[in-house]
View (tube, rainbow, N blue to C red):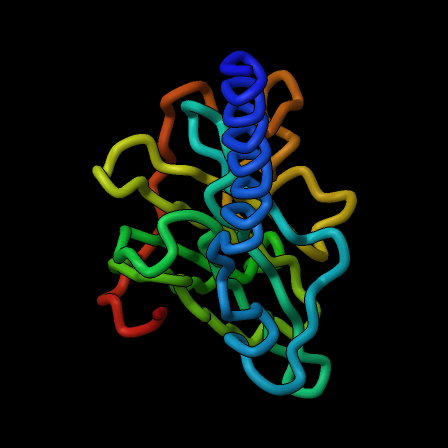
Length: 197
């Protein structure tokens, strides 16, 4: 009789634990902001431009870098959306650069950095269909091991990026277009953290 009672009690505890797991998963926090709303009316995601931002260790995705375009204004928009540490201010960087059409100059760019709870950006630049490069970083809460992502749009068939000696992602030695473990690129022209939430 006692053995039956103990087994019944164990069964009840296991059943309670199993039913608690889905409740915790369902209550997971998601980013309440969307890239289209952040960039503004008329902006739509450039197909295939979303980049997962992965940290070096343990390698999980901590956010997504997005590139959007507004056909009416001829502007591109870059924004880094956090997927972890939501509601906690962590350092986020995002940059957008318009190519100089291979004239030997760097073109024009804008970048920003600050501590944000949900996203960094938006950065909007008039591009009128020119080749653009976008990049971003999201740091962990302790400021270590940033997650990085970058991409280009409208640069098909190009092997250089606007100034001598520069390469596009994918045209780096070995053709990987990726950073070495622990390597963190610098972003151009960081401006005061006036944007982002």
